[in-house]
Image 1 (cartoon, rainbow, N blue to C red):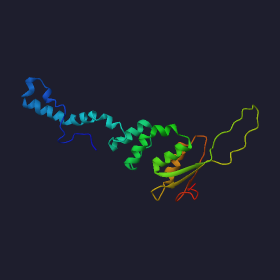
Image 2 (cartoon, rainbow, N blue to C red):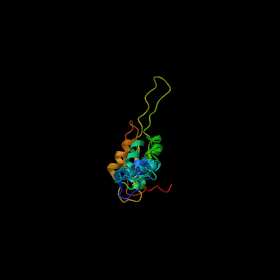
Image 3 (cartoon, rainbow, N blue to C red):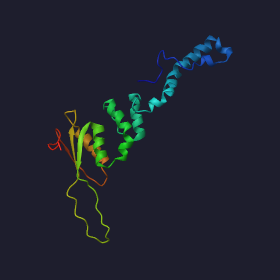
Image 4 (spheres, one colour):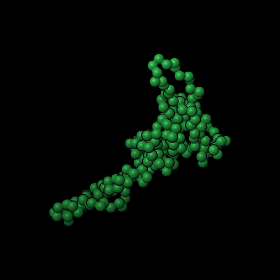
Length: 187
């Protein structure tokens, strides 16, 4: 969509009608201001609809990247429009859950349309007793299992990129990409 001059788009506020009476019958003044009306009509139409431009559910699709940048949402023009809209709508909620299992699972679902589960916690342990022995090493790194929902293929590079971005900085996660749901999915 273009918000440039749109042929035939009338101005809701024609300049020629707002000129002093002296210029109301002047052909040159009316043609000159009509040219300005052609240029300004899309600007007025955009300003009149500004609330719709700021709502990711109805904004023109070319504005989604701009809105996504405002709220720190991931946006890829190659994605279908509806998942892009949902990612912008839910960006603040996802930031609140960043670094958690829920945030990682939801982020992968929104960005790639995949299912995921996270096992292990990668957390830290501590003791209230000063000078206590060091805690044992955790049993292993957290594991992120990902499998497709509707698509037959999962983009492994994007999965790794999202996992790195959404996991806590002190945590290194292992990633497994499965061809389908895990065998114990029916729990």
